[in-house]
Image 1 (cartoon, rainbow, N blue to C red):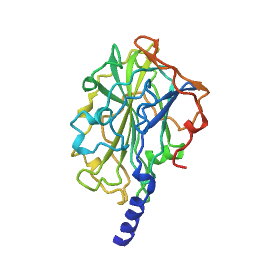
Image 2: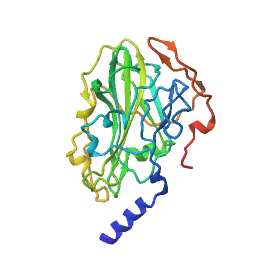
Image 3: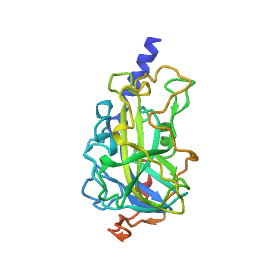
Image 4: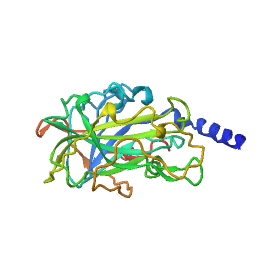
Length: 286
């Protein structure tokens, strides 16, 4: 048993893609392509709907950062300069720049109201409520099938529905993967939060109170301290319970048909995003 687990662990650590980690490179809403912040090209796309970060190594936040602002929208996160319009009930397609097979764990999505503007809101004041989550899908054979595996199979991309009942306004969409391959160590959980500015339209009336980013996770949560090489039949996904009435969609990979235009303020055009190419929607690990 020890030998087989040791070999499995070495195989996970030897994954060359694992050294790169990842980030959200672009977002597809109603067939329109919007840039995310790319730490590999931090000055190439100045008008994005994705919050910028100082995670230039494409790294993570672990338990030592759960009570700091790093966990909110990642290390050194700063407000995106624009936002994208979306209607309640629409689907947001989130393209990651690859994801390591070894970095298994849950995928989650949150919203937080920005009030008057997501371009100027204080990230420390954002209160997040969960709208989607996928954790352990099948634990019959370690290290299991996880939400991250489904994301990889979907061309390293994810989809989330904006709840139909949400009150119109400006919101930050916080999407996150938690990698658990090193969670057997004291501070081994790896969180990869990414934030996206949206203006939600519709006739909904629901505005959940939410939780401050620094209070989303407990550093001592058993769900962050475990060995995924041990077989498990269930897994308690960290963070608050999703709000009532939401559902997890079957993953798909819709291709954008045009470039979206980030907006500022109450609808002013910020700048046209980059031209859509096949390379921007392709799995970067292949």
